[in-house]
Image (cartoon, rainbow, N blue to C red; front, top):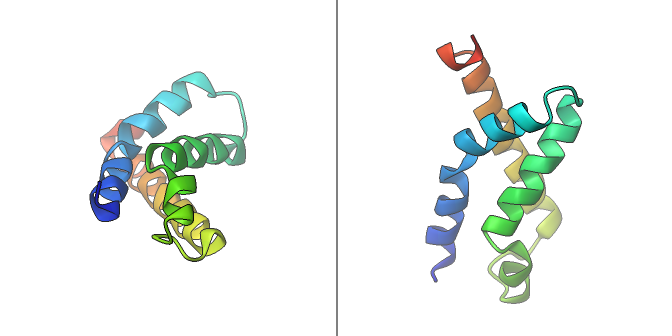
Length: 84
């Protein structure tokens, strides 16, 4: 499958994923929740396969960018009616 399609599919699950993580890990720290979200999304986009196929040439930068996306989705959800 085209990496871009796979990546967008992984990103599309973020809002529901974050809501689920919040329900499961409610008492844990924000960093614990963020790490759980990153692990699940990384698996969803098959990051290991993408690195091996050279679709991701810098895994550290990719993970950092993905973390920024997760942080952005959390900020949007926290600023919305969802937070209530």
